[in-house]
Length: 441
Image (cartoon, rainbow, N blue to C red; front, side, top):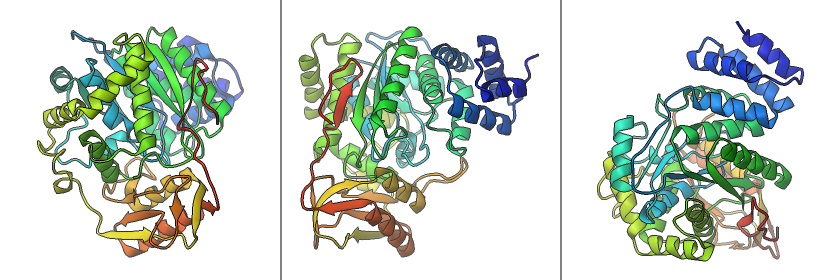
């Protein structure tokens, strides 16, 4: 019998684990024979000492094999997109219905907030009635009918990851390339995908702020995925500021709905979404040319076809039939709204995006412990971007809070995180692709 403490010791001392040792540890993780303390110790050992590509592949495949692996019989490719996490990142909510409108099927297995970043499932939980944890039969029916279903991990899919994910969140071991790779890809491989595009965030609000570290993660994801038989590519995108105009669950849900319905279209959010769609359309074979792929995604969004797919998905998973038309009738509002006047006049030059995320967590919009309840109504709205003017009558954001004290506390945190000057220009939101198609940073 392989003792978990000996496996931890090997990795703690910088050794290399065998496939059998990794498989045994994942089996104990899944069955809960291994304690929470041992899981945390293992995660910390990997955090400090890393894993080889071979170890990472073994960990990914063992976690994939800890539950059911789906198979499908559909008339189009099975695709998905995953983000490494950011502030205001609601891309998945728009991308999935765009891809469905383009002829793909998207069984999107998403996660909850991790650390200072928001989670897609927490955003969807702000929709009354929407079931983020349906059974496999309902998942299959929704994907077949709507072309997409955005849900969380069921008990059947990569259960080892579900436990490890929760422990990483509260033990400061999130920022580990092997653990991030295995966590993401175990769920994607279990979903039975044909193609996957990764959105790897770079900047102050990302888990890996440095460009070199983000490149390393992107390389790990693409190499491990392709090595496991899943076609995968990655884009590095900017997370030095909020993506879109909102950060907070119901607020982000509303912004995504407004983009799908054609009521708003914040340029950076739209650009990331369409760039990822174009990459994925080529990757899965629905388009051969990137320009044609981009045009197809734009048409799906602009024509309302993507919005119709989103409405189908929402209804199929228990949400309101009129959510697109009447979001304010269903999404929870916060009782306090405080314009955030920075007390400075000028152009936003930079911001600490991580601080914005932590402000949302402090308002109740994120978790400090796995069992914490989320306040879906709170967050930041009308957030200014780098290069935009602030001053009297031009607040940096509107704080949505449960109490006046909460609002003022968030305002102080955010105000300290924003640099204002005479001039400022934003970084291109798409920085580069894994194959080297780079943009100036």
